[in-house]
Length: 382
Image 1 (cartoon, rainbow, N blue to C red):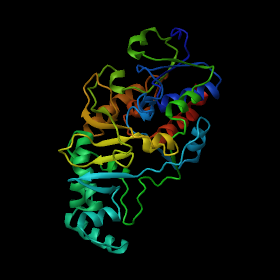
Image 2: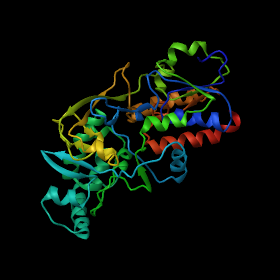
Image 3: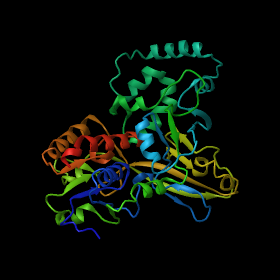
C-alpha cells in the first residue's frame, strides 16, 4: 500500500516513460518510488496479453513494434528482455488492391502500371512533383505532394492521414510526413533502424522485469486526480498523463485522438498474411488491422493453428473523458500547450514526460531515450 503522505517520488502512468524513470530512481538512486496508473495493468499502450481462446499473444492497443538506431536504448531494454528477429513490413489497401508501404519502387510501378528502374522512377517522380509547383511546403499536405506528387498523395496519404488525425491534412504540421520514408528502390522494410523486434516473452513480461525492484511499488486502478490532495507537498511527481487535465483545463482543452479497438477471432490459419494492414480509403472506417500471430513467427506451433486473432483500429476525436493516444499538433493546440508547459515549469517538484505530458508524438525508442536523458539531466536534483 502506498503512503501518499510520506512518498518522496510518485510516477503517474506505468507506460514506457514513467516505468523507465521509476526504474532509474530505484536502481541508480536506490530510493523508493511509487507508480500509480488508472488502468488495471502495467506497460501503458505496450501492454500485451494472451488470448485464452487462441493462445495468441496480442497487443491490447495495436501492434507495438520496437525499432531504434540508439545502441544505448537497445542495450538498456535488452537488460529486461530479449527481442526476436521480427522485421516490419506493411501492406496498404487502396480501392481493393494491395500495395507495399511505405511508398517504394514496387508501389510506384503498381500504382502507375509502369516498370521503372530506380533512376527512371526518380525522373518520373520529379516530373510529378514539378507539376505541384510547391517549393516551400507549409503543412503536411504540401510536404507530401512536394515529395511524391499529388496522385500518390491522394491515393495513399491524404485519406489515411485525415482518418488518423480527424482533421484536414492542411492543418497538420509538415513534420508528421517526415516519419514516413519514401524510397525509389525496392526496399520493402518499413523501418531502417539498426535494431528491431518484439520482446520474445512479450511486452508485459519486459515491463515486469523492468519494475521488479524492491524499491518500486505499483498501484493500479488508481486515478491521480482522486488522490492528489493526499500527496506529500514535497513529493516529486513524475507526470505522464494529459497536461491540460493536470491544470484543470485552465488554458483550454487540447485536441487528442482516441482509438477504438475491435477484436475478432477467425477459424483460419492466416487472415491477412501480414501483421499490419493499412487502409487508405476514407470509406473504410479503420486505419489498420492487426493480426498478432505474425509478430511471433518463432512461436511456430501457435502460428500453424487454424485460429487467428485480428484487431481493427478505428481513430476518433477524443472527448474529455476518453482514453487518448495521440496529440494533435496543430498551431492552435501548440499555442495552448506552451501555456501549460510554462506553468508547469514554475513547479520545481513536477516533472513532465511521455506523449501526453509533453504533448508530443514519440515512438517507443524516442520515449525511452527521452526518459533516460531527462533522468540523467535531473539526477543531481532528485
